[in-house]
Image (cartoon, rainbow, N blue to C red; front, side, top):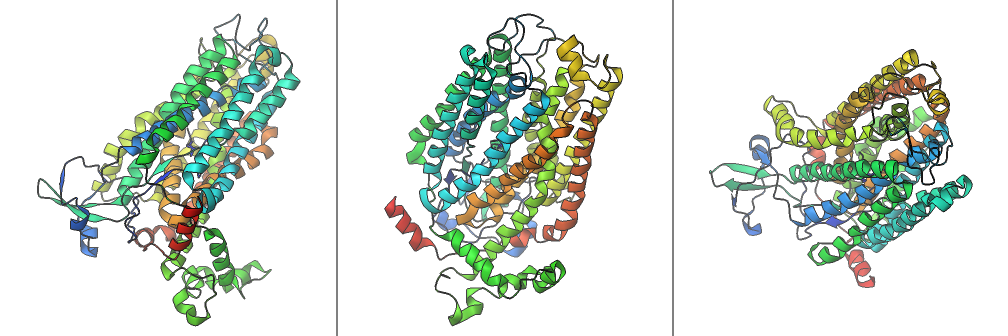
Length: 606
C-alpha cells in the first residue's frame, strides 16, 4: 500500500507532506545524503560518537570506506506507530469502499452484511455500479493528494509540522464520523442520503505522515573491531523510510483484513467505526511524546522568495516559441540559469528580499529538479490505482471459494512486509557487492517496469475471465443478476499484487526519500507534497478512463494502463539518466542560510 494512499502511502505519506520533522538543529553543515539501499545496517557499538570527536570524511574516504546507517532514535518508533494507526484507519475504511458503492444490499440485509450465500456472496449497500465506485474512489484519492499542498504551505511557513498534523487529525475524525453515519441501517437503506454523507466524509479525510530525520552530515566512526566506517545520513534516511513503509503496510494489512470480515458478517457501520477508534490513538501518542521531539520551526516567507528567485532567473528568457524558450534557458544547462541569480554574482545589485546565500540557490535548483523527476509519476500511479478499485471488482467475478473479494488485495501489503526486510538485508547489499550502484533514479525506473508487468498479468486475467465465463464479456451482469461467475480461482490475482508490491518498494518508497533529500530544508514539506500531488493528477487521468471500467471494456482498461506504465518507464529514464550521474554531487551540497531570523520571529509569534 502507498504511504499516502490517500492517503500510503502513507501516505501517506501514505501524505504526506503534512509531517512531523524530528531533526537535531545543532548542525548547519553539509548534508551528504547518498541514496543507496545497499548500505548494510550496523548495530555494533562505536568508538568516537561524541559530537566533538566526529570527523568529516575526505573525498578519498567517501570513495573507499564502507558506509553504514546510524542508530535510529527511539522517537522514530513512536512516529512509526502513529502512522501504523493512521494507515489502519485509512485502509480499514477504504478497503470496503468499492463494495459499499458498487454492490446492492444483499437480500434481507439492512447493514450491507451477507445473510445467505457466504461462499460466493458479495456485501454491498448503494448498488451504483463499477463506474460509480471507480469514480468515487478516484475522487477520494484526488482530494487526499491535493490537500498536502495546502498542508505543506501552512506547515513550512506558519504553523509548523506538529500543529498542522493536529489540524489534519481533527478533520479526519470529522470525516470518519460522517462515514459511520452513512453506513448505519437507518441511512444505508436510503441510498441517496447515504451517498451524500459518504461523499462529505471523503472530503474531510486528510492524509497524515510523520517523518523523522537523524544526523545531517556524514562522519567517520571506528567500530570496536577497529574498522573505520562512514555513518551516512542518507543510509539512515533510506532505512527510516523503508521501515516506515513497513509499518504502514502492517497497519493497512491488519486494517483491511479485519474490516473486510466486519463488513461481511456484521455490516459497513462496524467497518467504519473500528478504524475511527484506532485513529484516536494518533493524537494521544503524539501528545505524550511531544516533549521528546525536536521540532523544526516554520521559516516564514520561504516560498515567496523561491518564486521570486525563479522569476528573476527567468527575466528576459520568456518566449511563446517552445524551442526558443528552451534555448534561451541555457539549452537545458540549468546551472548557468541559476548561477546568474546567485547573491555573489549579483553583488550590490541584489534585491532587498535576497537575504539567503548561494548555497540556498543551489538547494532550490536541486529541489526543482526533484519536482521534475516526479512529473512521470502519474503514469505509475495509474497502474497502482487499479489495485484500489478495478481489481477488487475483478475478483468478485472469479471463483472466491469463501474468500471475500476485497481481501485478496491484501497480498499487496503482505508482499511488502516480506520483501522490505529482504531488500534491506540481502538484495541491496548483494547488488552493491556485485559493483552495481542501485541509485534512486534506477530504482524508480525498475518500479515503473514492475508496475507495467503487473498490469500485463491483470490484462491476461481479464481476458480469460471473459473467455471462460458463462456470460462472456458481461461478467458483472452475470454475477449480479444470475449469480454466476467465471471458474477461475481468485488467487490468480496474486502475481499482480506481488508485482505491485515490488514496484512500490522501488518507486513509492524512493519518491519519499528523493523528495526529502533533494529539497531545501525549509521546503521539505512542499517538495514531498508535490511528489504526492502526482497521485492527484493520476486520479484525474483515471477519471478520464472511467469509461473503460465496465464490461466489456475491462481488457482494454488494463492493457492501456500497462502501455502507459511502460511509456512512463522509458520516458522517466531517458529524461533523467543525466541527472542520475549528478547524484553524489547533489547530495553533497551545503545547507543554505539566511532564514534563521525570520524563523525565530515565527517561533515567538507561536
